[in-house]
Length: 257
DNA sequence: ATGGTTGTAACACAA
Image (cartoon, rainbow, N blue to C red; front, side, top):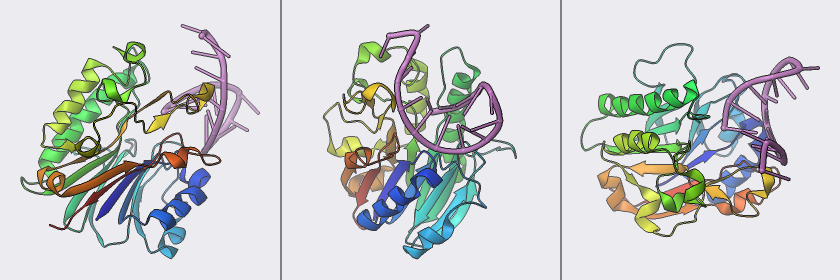
């Protein structure tokens, strides 16, 4: 089974790019973030034409998450435990092929002095609670998406530029560690030790051309999946296309149970 | 480079 995650930065702006990628790569599951589209306007038919069922939790203009899969999607749940009606649409989870998949769009955090920074930390704490309450020990669990945090020095182009800043702050690292302490491994790091491999580059100042990026998109997996994980790649070619998302897809492959 | 670009939407805000 192959599971991918991609912050598409507007599904309507990126529809052709995403569908072309699906056609070419044919993952079993694609988790999308920042769809920026209401459920009513979601291009469900276009995915179905390619053989994908979709479930989504969207809103107007901002946020929005969705899962597309070539297999049956069961037990869809929207939001964190204790979610309220007006909350940002940042989490959708579902069971596909006996695997519980959490598609996450973690708040950006904006800046250290912003209320959004506390919101980001609180959201990650609530994500851990959600994992504890909505799964059982031994379940195959995938927690993937845009985490807006670079995990360590290898995941930023220049540590000195990020030390203590948002996306690389000790409080963010602690909050993400707490999520991973549920029992999750960074699938990409199971197969790649090298630093300087990024999943996001700012649109501005030629950041991509200068390779000034960060690795902030992850596929975290529980122990059994980690043992069966045969390959993980980041599809940097998608960032070279016309009108690209600022993020690229991450794809993980797993052998049979 | 307290700049830069993109998407949504509406004359700004989020990223």
